[in-house]
Amino acid sequence: MPFVKIIEQAINRRKHLFHSSDTNAFRLFNGSGDDCEGLIIDFYNGFVLLQLYDSSLYNDYPHICEHLKRILALINIQVNGILLKDRSKVNDPQQIAQIRKSTLVDGNLPPDNFSITQNNIAAYVDLIHGQNTGVFLDMRTVRKRMLNYYKNGGKLCNLFSYTGLFSVHALKNGLQYAVNVDISQTVLNRAKQNYILNDIKYDSRDFVKMDCKQYLKKLIKQKAHYDFVIFDPPTFSRNKKQNFSVKTHYRDYLSLIEYIAQGGLVLTTINAVSISARDYMSLHPNHWKLELLEHEPEDFPYKSQPYLKAGLWKIP
Image (cartoon, rainbow, N blue to C red):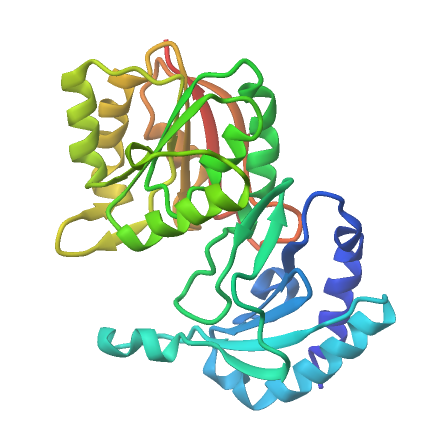
């Protein structure tokens, strides 16, 4: 089988990650960056999630699983279960939930309330339902580089907060307060569970179900101020209450964020290979000062240019 060797090479390049003391979830194989378009393999604390973006790979997945177990056994890594998720294009939105549901192809399912560790914080993950598991593995180095900025404490506003992991990481490393804002009550509930998992006290005001732009306008009226703002939006999203497109709305959000973060720091991200680092930086006001720029970590190699642009900006 032509790609067995490249899978083995990819895992061998990453085998040092299995010995990390603060992280037990990372990418084992990254599609075209590891020379096989459409194949993604992730490791989550003893379980493997195999994602196929190319339907032509379906005939090969039993062989991939077989060789994957053999390769990991050679470096003394136990695999408790392997799950397969279909990530091929779906034309009917009504079918997404069912098609994206993972199938167990080897071993056991993860236990209920299954969690992983990233940057010394715990996070619940769902390897079965939906497109995303609850933690973005490519944010590992971004979170690590943010550590030094949290030491002096402060307040954080986490926009498009998803499962709240930026807030959890900040609160466990020096910040005193964080508010999580998202349009989805489901992900906010998951964020609360991550707070509990990490022994962080909270009340209902720490989680706000609201359109992020409307919330920013509310904060501006209140003359609120935050030392940190996380702006990690989807590249594109649409639902009944909120539309967002990087090309259309990004600058508008930054102009609002500036009002609540004067003298503070803003972490902004874009996850799109079609937007270069230069284009990303050009979206920001000229008077913002770039403190750091980070891309995806070493286990996410790329062919042409990085898709992740994460910059920390100082607002005068």
